[in-house]
Image 1: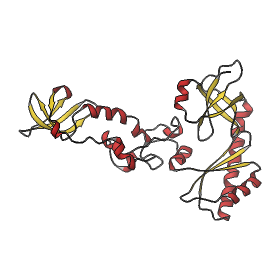
Image 2 (image 1 turned 120 degrees about the vertical axis):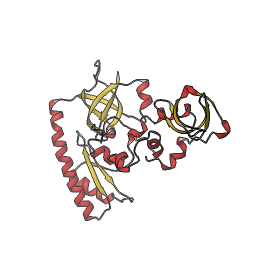
Image 3 (image 1 turned 90 degrees about the vertical axis):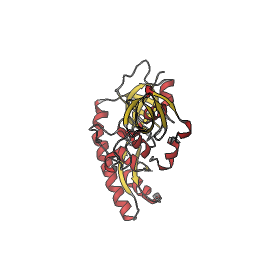
Image 4 (image 1 turned 45 degrees about the vertical axis):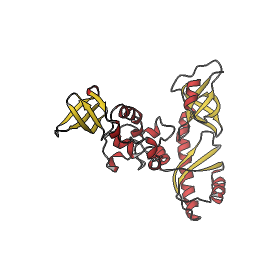
Length: 286
């Protein structure tokens, strides 16, 4: 029986699910699956292969029960109404018990076997009595999940500054570490208000081209090194990575742009230490 990668849940979990017998599920097909959480709606992304497995860290397992019917899709409005009721009840119970937590979102799955309450809190919360209150009120299994600001944006954010849906709510399954070095290397603005995403942290997209910029940086003499060209000797003032050029100040104080091919030699004794990505790990935002 063929296996398919299916996306499901409000946190957009990815899992490998056994498909229906003798059926190829096309991309985008809506299905009802049985996961470890219960019966829920999902969307087929592709067939599961050894290549897709290399991209999935601890994928969920389960099986496709049936193609989603009109009734299943219409049930989304009922599920949303149940989630709203759960949110109102949770806020009331949490306030009554004076719990220091900020409720972000409530997820009720199709089969009503479980409700997941996503919350943000700076401290550890003892929600054992809250779970009992909610279980009695909602008559289902209750799961409390503490999340960070990036996951909060994943649940609530819509569009980024680029005008497209935020990456964390579309294709990103893991939040990559991002550091200020990535912004500096790409010569983007360092204004926090412009390089921060909807979560208030550095934008994930700063990571996308960083490896390419870093590879290009290593091909060029570092800033501060002394180079020899047909025009004379000079000191590297700046790198223009994408066009593979250097701004060089010569001994007669001329400042010229030279290409990588024009560099005849580098004075090794003058080469400066080239910072590595690892040096910024302590400052990386995750």
